[in-house]
Image (tube, rainbow, N blue to C red; front, side):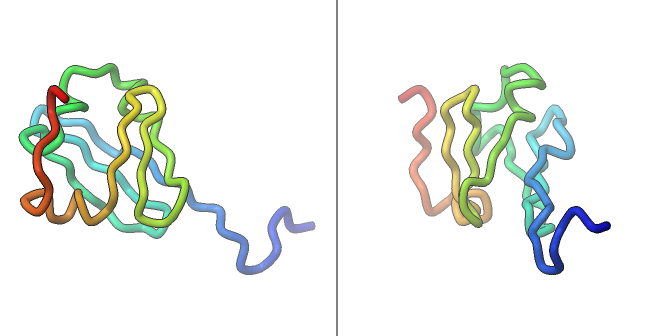
Length: 88
């Protein structure tokens, strides 16, 4: 007996590594993204538990509920196109 029908989506977004330079996430679609602390300072001094608790409510939209941080895939790939809002 199979738990899933063919075509059911079972992958989840997850933080794969936290380094002294930034955070790596793997999207539900299998894309790996890096968020350097210089561009995403909200993650730098947070606990591993808070950083690892990530959700992808819709494709390309990531949410960290414990940190109340919303970031899009486009923002991660092209941070130079978005103003830094740290401290806001």
